Length: 265
Ligand code: 3PY
Ligand code: MG
Image 1 (tube, helix red, strand yellow):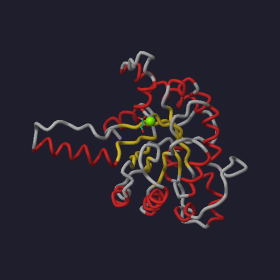
Image 2 (tube, helix red, strand yellow):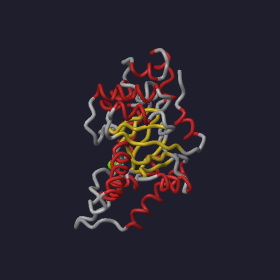
Image 3 (tube, protein in one colour):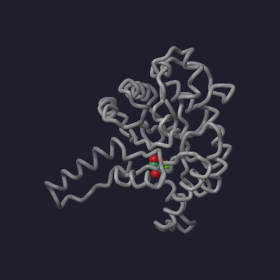
């Protein structure tokens, strides 16, 4: 059975760099998966991607020698079981605010006796180059569990959440964090307040020994976060790479056309 190199790197304290798949296009994914990212996360939380398309994409990433991850819409047993059975090598779970939510997600990603993942499916083992029997015995060691901190509540509970066994990394969604920090009158946090919240996550991660990471817009800011101690760095997305480069080209030939700001990630 193949080993999950992204998970190994995190354990060794090394940084990993990946990107987000928002388009979920098979051709684009096959190309990107060959370029050297440590992992690629298919965004099933915010994109219109169906199960069979997701399954093909996980297979394409794994066959290209990269690590396929899935961001599920929610950290429940149903979604986690389906993406893992469809062949993802790990999950990214949004909006984890409480220990209870974290425990449900971790348990769903692990076969008994560690968790409660149900036995079944055949795509998962194929993506690891293993028999189903081998996969059932070794998957708990290879599947990666990444939980997202995206709110002040998640930060309040950070130490208890980040200390849970079975967790491989914490990932900050900076956009949701910013919106969740708005006061009742709609005021956004200052950039200093937002940054202080990010630093708190890094601090707690270091304290309990859990790798942290964040969704960065470009390589420079990802490398800066690695200097600060982060290890699970997402840079942009397939959609953002396409639109930002296209926008640059349009701006060069038609400088009066305004930036359409279509894709953040
Ligand atoms: C956010 O910024 O909220 C994200 O979820 C990025 O992945
Ligand atoms: Mg988010």
